[in-house]
Amino acid sequence: MPEGPSIVILKEAVAPFTEQTVITAGGNASKVPVEELEGKKVRSFKSWGKHLLICFDDFYIRIHLLMFGSYRINDNKATTPRLSLQFAEGELNFYTCSVQLIRQSPDEVYDWTGDVMNPAWDHKKAREKLEAKSGKLVCDLLLDQDIFAGVGNIIKNEVLYRTRVHPKNRFGDLPEIKKEELITEAVNYAFDFLEWKKAFTLKNHWLAHTKTTCLRCHLPLHKEYLGTTKRRTFFCTGCQILYASANPVVPGKK
DNA sequence: CCGGTTGTTCAGCG
DNA sequence: GCGCTGAACAACCG
Image 1 (cartoon, rainbow, N blue to C red):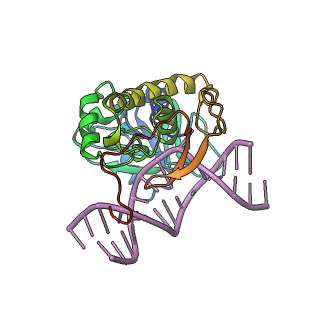
Image 2 (image 1 turned 90 degrees about the vertical axis):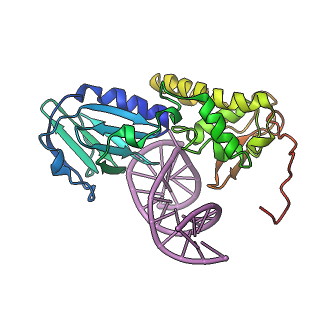
């Protein structure tokens, strides 16, 4: 469930527990001293990219749902939660996720301007970070959480399709207008994703992700595992342009 | 029933 | 000590 917009939905769903005191805390997140949460008040819920932050006075809990994480609000599953918080009026359960207790303020840890869902998102800074990594492939850069925190594999595929950019372009080889579009559409698509996910219609809106035919060209879509992390990538070689490289990669050389 | 995945971390290597 | 890569991990869907 976990790209940035899904975490925003989670953050909104748990907001009613703000300023509530944890009565009992449990779970099998062995590294987290859960008993320390008991009797403490949740001051706020924040999100950064794919992280949900449960903020207390002197520390915060960082939840990352990874690929298979799930949660239940005022409900539970048969399995042991990684983290369970019981309040006077309800409970919060997180399963199969990464849980960390961090004794810092989120402001000391996170660059809010790098989160595509955050009002503090800074397009210009993203552009600078991209220029600094301009030799890398756009399919990798969109997944780079230091640049586009919250963007995941679905958003990556859809943004590349929308902007008609071939995933194997190096950022530096894109024309100026495409460089800008890539950044703009990463944010636009993330917010479209949010609205569609809330309406339970997200999948209906996929144009490339999991698709086999290009809606624009009616050509078969390619499915390849691309980039340093070899993630599933859907693209059309008819309308997603691979721009000529100013500095071609020499085979056998980096 | 099995294969595949909306993701990250870390060990091991050069 | 670094940067890179591949393995490991996980649960649910089709």
